Length: 585
Image 1 (cartoon, one colour):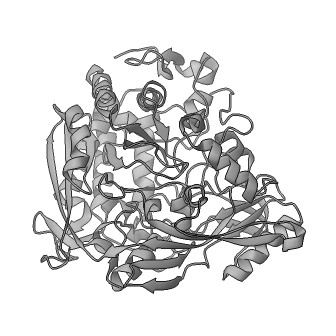
Image 2 (spheres, rainbow, N blue to C red; image 1 turned 135 degrees about the horizontal axis):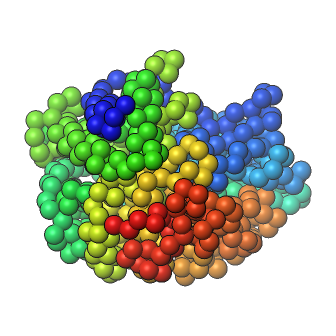
Image 3 (cartoon, one colour; image 1 turned 135 degrees about the vertical axis):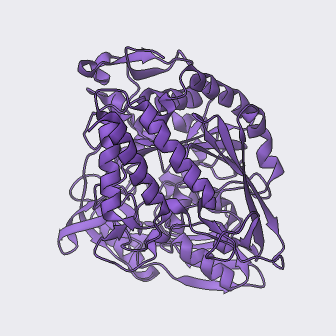
């Protein structure tokens, strides 16, 4: 097949994927066992942790209420077994859910998914920790309440999204992170034998430990219930505007102050920025808009498999296919824009901007988790049971005051060769940019920040370089090392977490709470100890570790020298070390 034919095939397949509106098989649960509830493995939503090592556990339990949850923790604590929590879809990329070793215990919160109480007059809602965001915001809306901010993907559980500090976009009010609306938690932690090996700790709004528990990486215990302070039901008005990126660096500092829920998507190869004008309006405003993200819908599985196969041929062939990838990316981005990114004015049709709708219909999406099983005729694009989408997700934040200079350096890198961004970054999304306010949470953002979220191609072959992978690696190293950025706790590859904990001024307070709640470290793991700076490093130094994002390369063997990928300085940030071909743009 010629290069032109491959380009045409990829373009047609990926546009067909974006246009398809089917619904079908939701993703599987992340825990699988060979003998009932024993001899188990646990994974994440994409079926692979960054180090590609399978995580094993001795057993899994599925408590149905807090009493059973206490029993599960007590049983493991009495036997001194390591424990970790698994959520409904396990959307976090790092090994947060892996207890380590064959004897570890998994506690699944999939059945802890109910609303405990709603006090509409006080604006309080208490839910079990395994409730997915979709159900939470729908129940809140039915009671005339709104959760002001949340992540955009509604397949996360409330316990999982809090543990990783997941967020939407806002610098207004309490900010874009869901944990800012937590006013109470019940958490089950290990205890001495005299207390039955497990206790329930109740943390109210004024409890000094709440700022440790509401972003905890899962190392304090199992969250049983969460109480949120909600607001009266409101609507949002959403409009997308595309402009050239000539003033992108200036706008990145200003946009979050202009629009309550504003964000941006930078399309580097096209030299464009898609600005989201997104503001609160009164609930009486006309409109019944709905967001059904095109990228979160179920797709015919055969289309997903064929699309991925075509992408692999372009990404991993010996000849450069930047032009083909750029052409396909432009068509996909244009298709997304024409379909208003999945927004409709009445739940079925898009008739024009602004789209006005209730908060619980606008704030998050992900309908591929909603439909009944159809035998995998259709699936979420990333479903681990098919050979569909497979990618890295790089997410980091830079202080708002430093964001303009960082953006200007990204543009300088782009200007060297815009086409290399088509292979290095998923051109459908570009770089998603959101705003996160400074938090009182010990492991929350210590200052107002701009979050940069990048999806990029990942080979299914261990150690296989990706075309222009050095682009994302240089950008991330620049953000983390030159601009003092912070990695998202629930995303990123290993090297991003090296030394991150030292950037949190209240990390010491968090670790002291951890030592009180779980002195034997039963909810800790080798991974969490590395990330929290307790023992070891998250870096894994070996052949091709730089290709996999397990280390920052310091030797050519960390790349793929036999394929022409050597460890080289960055093109703009010369302190970066990236795996790059010998040909510079």
